[in-house]
Amino acid sequence: MPTNPANATVLHALFGGTFDPIHYGHLRPVEALAAEVGLNRVTLLPNHVPPHRPQPEANAQQRLKMVELAIAGNPLFAVDDRELHRTTPSYTIETLETIRKERGAAQPLAFIIGQDSLLTLHKWHRWQALLDVCHLLVLARPGYNDRMDTPELQQWLERHRVTDAASLSRRPHGHIYLADTPELEISATEIRQRRHRGLNCDDLLPRSVQRYIELQGLYR
Ligand code: ATP
Image (cartoon, rainbow, N blue to C red):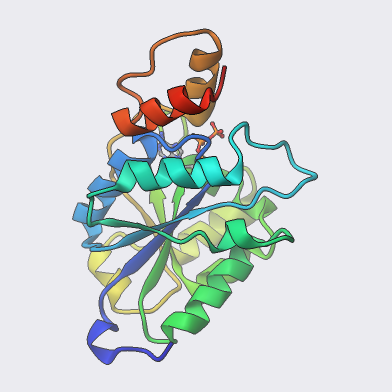
């Protein structure tokens, strides 16, 4: 896809996850992040989970449907289901490289991760190459600080970190921004466990997603 010069300074963001299920801990901090850094579109990218990794409880189609229900009517969000159509696993960096090619070299592009993911980023395939393709926007997550496990990751963070959100739309990629988003103590693991125990999940995820979970008999 050719670059649209009028669009080149608008920061677009992508947000990958297993979304088993999607919950307010994903949606609310990203909405706050959008206001904080000036995002008008966040594209959710449900992951293809390779067979050798622990499998999600919901299948790919159910995880996608839950994402679609959660974002219905909210113009901030879109979904890109390309990873779910793959028959072979793909690494995040490969998906982001493909999207970068489609969007052109000038488009400021960001990938959103939670603070917990940042702390273990050095375990991701070609993790340092992420910044050759996009910025990283990091959501605050309760219980996680900004001290990395390895000095290499810590130094990399310090080298690339910016504190001024405006710099993100001045360059197409290469910065890390730690956002001051609300900390919501919600995880998909907790939701699955509460469902297994027959507990209520009302404040944790949208009503439409809860209804779908009930109808499909998920997380019993
Ligand atoms: P699980 O409990 O199954 O590991 P999860 O709730 O962490 O799932 P994922 O789909 O694995 O959800 O997460 C996708 C992304 O969202 C990750 O980058 C993760 O760090 C981030 N994330 C998930 N929950 C929160 C939260 N409450 N606050 C901030 N970021 C979050």
